[in-house]
Image (cartoon, rainbow, N blue to C red; front, top):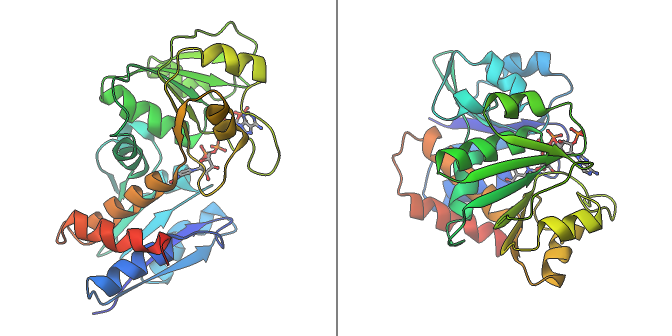
Length: 264
Ligand code: NDP
């Protein structure tokens, strides 16, 4: 039976998820198809999944929190993050997962001796990363330009600061989860503040992929080892695939198949 999957978001044309999953189906000889759906309105999310008779879907910006609300059951760390990027549809029952968080964690395996982490931004991605980092024993501080989204982090026991506050400077790893620099030349924090917080930083990470952001350029100029979000994207896809197919395939085979997308 040909199984149907897709990624749902807005915008969606840029998503490389169809390429990742379809190449893995081809390489692993699986009869399935993965497409993309542009959704105008969160209220039609559930109908889209049922209307297209999807066996599963990935959910991307800006619907991850709405997706959390439409699921009948939530598994694992997604319960705390309160946002999901992976839905499985089994006989009309929707189960939600978050693979962004473990995907990110896998992508920083090579970073050694990390203790104190600073997350720039307080949106959905910051939530996912802060929770998984806390679970893994890291000290996490969140810095955002405004107060508006701090309730979630405060309730989880994280220390939060705005750009106006006096910021600590003891961070080993700084993660940018803001879209600053994506369509402009802005840093996620004013330069003098970024210089101050990164005094002892050994690693920098930007969740945005395939673009040298001003933040990553800043890291290069300060000799801070850094990487973008491409591996996070890859590993969240591998983990979603693994969930879609009930852990039937070897994870390294899935990873190797998907990795080839970047070489094509
Ligand atoms: P959200 O819109 O939920 O949050 C964005 C955050 O960034 C907010 O806290 C916002 O602050 C802050 N912000 C926005 N613009 C600026 C700016 N110019 N300067 C400083 N702060 C700013 O976004 P998400 O968390 O959902 O996504 C963030 C990015 O992560 C996206 O670009 C997305 O593509 C990427 N991503 C990558 C993944 C991967 O696999 N590599 C996976 C998931 C996401 P305020 O609260 O004041 O508005």
